[in-house]
Length: 298
Image 1: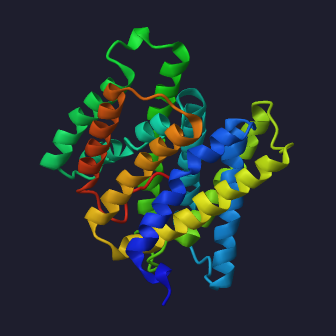
Image 2: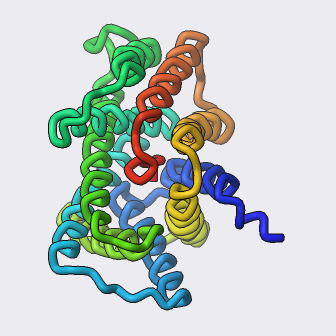
Image 3: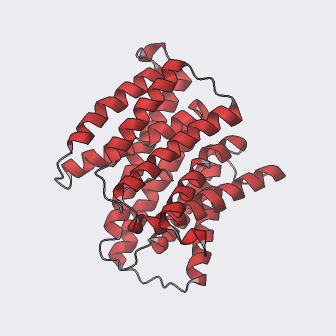
């Protein structure tokens, strides 16, 4: 019996693998843009190999290709913001703030799709703000400038990741495949090209000079992006919205755990309480999202 045949198990393994994403970024000395490039380049290649092995054809309309390019742009921007945020405020807090995308998705649903927010979502938004205030403090001006920059980048990641999810959702409207592996492969490799060009524009380099960093970036691309994304994408059509919401909660929770264990992040009681409140808000905010558009932090 294959344990990975259980969609719930795949969902939580995928969430755990993706929770390691900021750890890989923190372990390497390459620029944030470069590490984002390698994540998508390696991870996209893994998914492309999966498509070849399963003999899936890239039969996508011109309209879908256009939407996928837009989705790639949003994902590239998301990772640029996210990786910058990790460097400024650490893996745990950056991932927590980036997962505020559930509230951006709720706002987009209300403005664009005319979907009325649920009572849970209306409660979740002020809860999230309160939780964040407990973590970072209520006096914004008293925070170090780098810390404030990291929070702004984290919020930028939340907004652009929501844009990515919406674009992916539109690209899937006429698709008969339950797993968006074709779309994610195209988005990943296109996003990698965008980030590669951005790195060169910034005057950086994509070269990896240290052997151990090759290992960390391969782990990032293969485990967190490749397998993590495929495990979650393949499980979402077969699990409940509650299970998907719990997986969404698990990922930033584990990222906080890794931050404390691996990087000795100091946490006060107030900060722990704030993190708990924010995680509860993320869970409540995700409860009414559809399984197809729910985005565990990638």
